[in-house]
Image 1 (cartoon, helix red, strand yellow):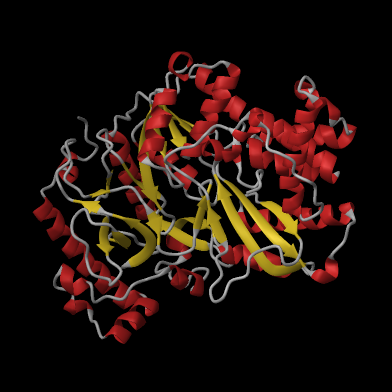
Image 2 (tube, helix red, strand yellow; image 1 turned 90 degrees about the vertical axis):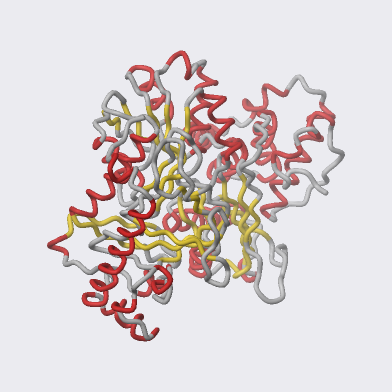
Length: 545
């Protein structure tokens, strides 16, 4: 087994903990001297740097929270001037204000060092070509793994997100051996490969992958590996740390958290340390971070830490899979989404009421988000053009704020449930243990039904299609063609052989589901045909109770 830094990676636990405590004490002392924010928090808690003589004493140091980042936007938590910084990344925030993270040159070196250790631990080397599906830009995912791969000597193909057919073409034409991206996009790659008759095992050299940026389960990993023949390794990190930072080794039994770079606590609901292997909230202290240090930062993720020796020979603790969050942040296709962001967009629209609901689905392992919003009573209209305009305006604004597309559905006043006390705004139907492929007939009939029942324009048609088919690039082109030609009839050709009565029932059923969701028409549903009944799991909105 190869090591990137064998001396550090195999250091005995006792020496690692000695190093951690020394680095903790130095970081607390430094922050007390240079950060007015941190010094104020310490003074309020009655804690001085010289009090930190043990890990137990360190627990007296107050927590940092996400709200501290928001309250000190954009750079009040920086402790180095801009002339010492070499990069700034920006990630999503809770109220439209992003999280701004600065990096010194040493910060970037430590970040890439962490990834180089992890990549080496599962078998990457200078003999590999690394195809990076992550987006480049202000988010940390793309550039983080890019520079980690370069550090181990791999050849990087910086293609970024999207353009799936080109991704597949390049992985066939070039000796690509490693992928990096979200697991849902890797499933999408596999779907398109199947459609194009490309066998990943035979037609490419891809053998390894790094997957992260969104929740996924062990069973999802097994299905992805079985389907593609690619050995997939989990990844964890956050912009507040550096970015994606910790990876699984070849044993695939937890992410190695490098103890010389990060002191990680797992705390129960009372703030007490969890036993080894017991699940609780992750609290992070970055031991060598210079520009934007974190001390006892409550990231909000739930997991467990395992210090038992790993078969790979590395001695650093392993972080188990994330199983949930303590706050209301949603992760959709690798993007952090907060209900408060959606509320702020709704508040900008004079034609919307404050009542809304978010539904998350992941048909075929691809996340989708539906946002239902009630119209304000004063703006009720049967004018389809006006309804389309309001829907498009809201959807465009949400995409701008969230950095991800939402399927916006305007519904009649009084449609959504009312709650006493704190409202429940989110229904998460996503399952990472199992998923059933979308039945293509439902997708086509959905499109026909939307037009027949609602006479919607190409924009709403595209939204409906994307909800059920999840093929954005193809659908954009299709919606544009339909919008220009109005040739909706041609998409029904595959179903003309069905008996008229069955087709009518299908159209009525599906039309009721979509049109009723928009609150525009009320069609009789008819009986559920046997042809559809077995596929009722595709979307519970399509079938009445």
